[in-house]
Image (cartoon, rainbow, N blue to C red; front, top):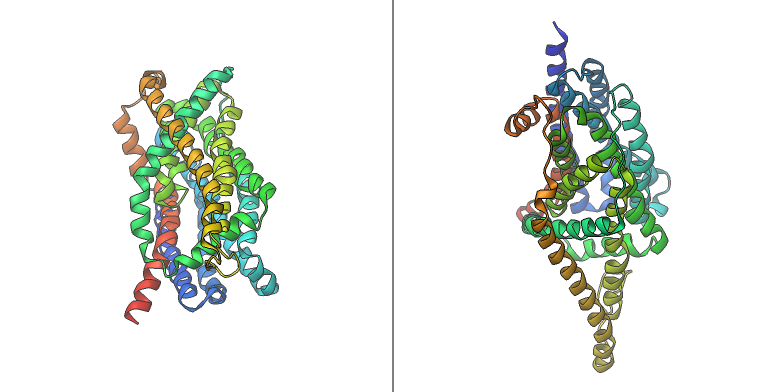
Length: 410
């Protein structure tokens, strides 16, 4: 049997195992929603039964798929290595949380959200980045010529980025809310979000949500990727960066705007050869969410009497004092939201006005864009990566849907 038949068989096997893992993960998570969080770790052995052989197959597949002689070969080689990165992204956190629960259950129960937040940052910034750097070391990288950007140009691009995020968010929110409507407890999810943002503290929040992901996600989805795809043209580099970055967010709330800004960041990196510019843009976006907007919302919740321990709202003893206390923070929040909205609208208008500046250059002999997209979407190896991304989507929405119907019908 030749190597191509073996590699295609391994890729199909990987996709099947990923699909089975997604089902087991979702059923296990649904079980914990119905019977409590402490039921979750007991499904780890069944998840491992699929996950561990999957990693072995992916590593073996990378031995067969390593050529970059053609665009199809390059797509396959990159996809398989990003699938290995995806395995570590998903399962290192999952198995680590199970171990923490088994050995220090009280600590886990008291600090569940903090543990998830810190471990996710460490996993992406250290483990996943290191793994991807290792598996990509045998894939040729090409240096992009560096060019400087003026501060005014960077500020204008940041405005355009905010415009894109707003458009993307408006596209994704209805789908996200429709699929999230089956959540068993809006109250408990509100407590989880509250704990994630408040218990960690402002400094940890700024680092783990605002700055570190911006640095390392730009390395993962821009520099590592584009340095190895640019030899086949700007379009394939931007397409892969945008699609892979968008899908990897694993939910419709973020997918569209992550895709849009992913393409934009890819274009900027290609034009400047300097990843620091996209890191700054990315961090500015994350920090607005992790600091000012979140802090204002949390202050409003406190003024409204939200109890962070129980997730309940404490009734005000003096309605007049309650209202007078709410007015300043509500006005400040409205002012902030108004400023952000104005920034986004102006940025999107500027993007439309300057759209011709974002024209991609074609390489001599480069296939048409439809043909490139066909190569990208019809590659069985690319579907190994896509399957991992779809696992994240399934894991985001399916457990709540299953738990909802189980409790409703049961």
